[in-house]
Length: 76
Image 1 (tube, one colour):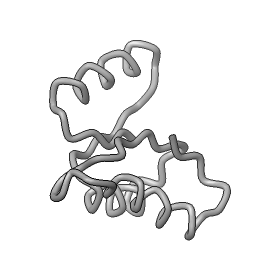
Image 2 (cartoon, one colour; image 1 turned 45 degrees about the vertical axis):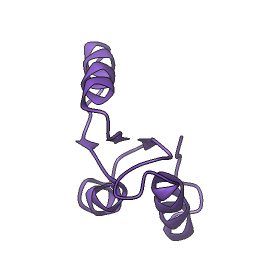
Image 3 (cartoon, rainbow, N blue to C red; image 1 turned 60 degrees about the vertical axis):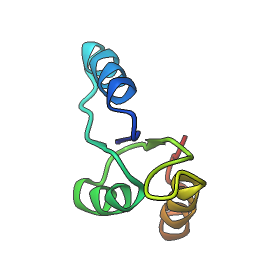
Image 4 (spheres, rainbow, N blue to C red; image 1 turned 30 degrees about the horizontal axis):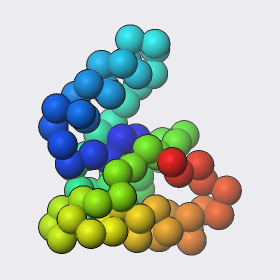
């Protein structure tokens, strides 16, 4: 799972990870990240810290929420 609001960076990372055989689900904001993790149950999450709507620490808050539900869930 990749959470990144910058389309260019997100697409570049998807391309890189896919090239090495990883299946990537991507989202562009923190709320979508939480929903997508519940839907897809990924092995790992790579998230941006500053994401829409406020571009402050929404990604960090989403990561904390995910770890509250699954304490050993790998989040970068």
